[in-house]
Image (cartoon, rainbow, N blue to C red; front, side, top):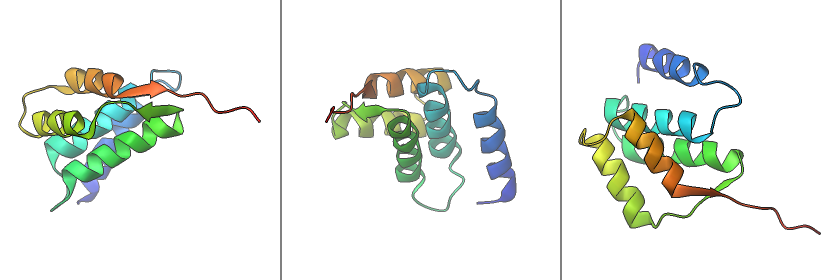
Length: 102
C-alpha cells in the first residue's frame, strides 16, 4: 500500500461529520478498500473488518448473515454498486445493540 492511498482514505473518512450515521464512514472505508484494492492481497477481508470495527465501536452489531455480507463485498469489488449503495448495504447489515444492565 502506498502513502497516497492512506492519505486519500484518511481524507475520505475525515470528510464525514462527527455526528453522521456511522454507516457513512464504515461504508466509505469498505468501498475504498474493496473497490480501489490498495493492498496486494486481503482487500475484501480488510475492507469488511474495518467496516465492522467502525460499526461495532459505535454500538452496532452485524445482523446480516455472512453469505449476504460476502455478496455485498463481491458486488463492491466488481463495481456493481457505488459508494452510496455500499453505505446502504452497511446500514442493512448492522443494527444498534443494547448493553445488558447489571
